[in-house]
Amino acid sequence: MSIALNDGFKIPIVGLGVWRMEGKDIRDLIINAIKIGYRHFDCAADYKNEAEVGEALAEAFKSGLVKREELFITTKLWNSDHGHVVEACRDSLKKLQLDYLDLYLVHFPVATKHTGVGETDSALDKDGVLEIDTTISLETTWHNMENLVSMGLVRSIGISNYDIFLTRDCLAYAKLKPAVNQIETHPYFQRDSLVKFCQKHGICVTAHTSLGGAVANTEWFGTVSCLDDPILKGLAEKYKKTVAQIVIKWGMQRNTVVIPKTSKVERLKENFQVFDFELSKEDMDVIKSVDRKYRTNQPAKFWGIDLYA
Image: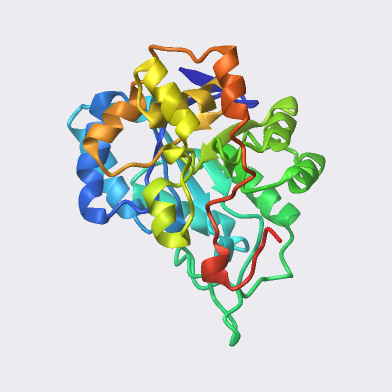
């Protein structure tokens, strides 16, 4: 299953996010994921594992396991490279061992102090606060993203972590509309207004942190995961599925792309076994009732400033 983007390309509705995947595990996870049926991989320069992902992809292509054109590969421009968009994209392509990207996203709507192309450092001032670059506008960044399409380096371009205000602005100045807005959204952080605004204006929503962060965000940010919610557990029992499968299916039925991350092969399989059932409208409404407006991904912990404030 896939969703048609506003530029004519299609994005698989379920993908695998590679955030916080360890280098030594990536090869087996990606090869296994392709064998299971995954065709969409969500990467980022800031995940610092593009080179390992690239090695796994190269092996998959060389062995004949899959063809390049059968995969949808996303990666992202880091904050410190807003003034070096073309160079950063080429750096990601080199690490991923690819000739083109299916989708390139502006990772966060903020430019920060440049620390070297592809370095993805977040420079802090003497007070431990993120060094924000106030000389580069998001409009300038976006027009440089558009150039990547005309150069043939990227098929689709998009945004990430943009709210309604910033998305509206991007639509106003864009020559090429963003194909995707990748945002945190899950049953505890449903963001219905933002999702509907994007979809109304032809922007596909991809849900990062689509399982509510689970163990990873609990470790880093001390947050609570929706996977432990008693109502969702009840639905899992009703449908004889895992809670994660219920949450993924909920995202799919909202017409959003979901990219759950896992480092376990058995979970890879489970997270992809979501095409053989449907949640009833009544149960979709039940899930709507568990919304807590609860963000679990909190980069302020590292940046000394809450950009969502």
